[in-house]
Image 1: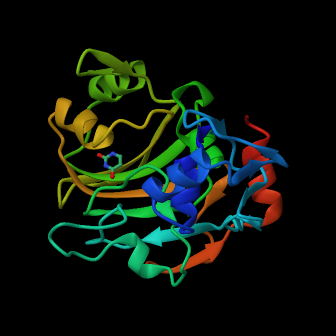
Image 2 (image 1 turned 180 degrees about the vertical axis):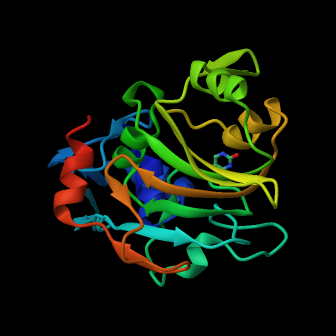
Length: 236
Ligand code: URA
């Protein structure tokens, strides 16, 4: 639910101030009913009419991107660095669902659907995200057990759903750990391995729930299928 004037302004029809004037003058209808109250809240799917013109609802778009390194997971960057939005040619105001660090690669969903975003990011939904972390050194058996039992980060324990050793290179003194977690705090994977004194050297997010990067190369994207969108909505 959002204030009527905000929905009108967001649609690009007019400014928020002008929208307030239209409302006060009785020129705005919601689902056929005149609304003059400025605090009125409407839903995105409501039929909004201003001076007999129906507001066009923005089509929903859903993308799955293989985020390359050195891209920012936001709509704009103050330092003018390349953003993930630059990789998807659309005029729709999409945004990334959650964040991946500048130097992290992997799966990222972009959309203009606020409800789907809420489903994917709400802590209660416990959406699984799987990462492949290349780390400095090789975890001892003890460290591995500690990781499995959960690491306290900023007073809250992160208990991974799954942890797996994927690669061990004794010569180079590096290893790769697959780790699945359901939370989304910033830099969380890096903090976990920092806590274990095995800093992350490279990080890739391989999957979010049932979605993965199959068939995509770095920098490539595809649209989510209707079946995939419905499946995400089924978590609601
Ligand atoms: N955890 C991190 O440390 N970085 C990311 O980009 C995602 C999760």
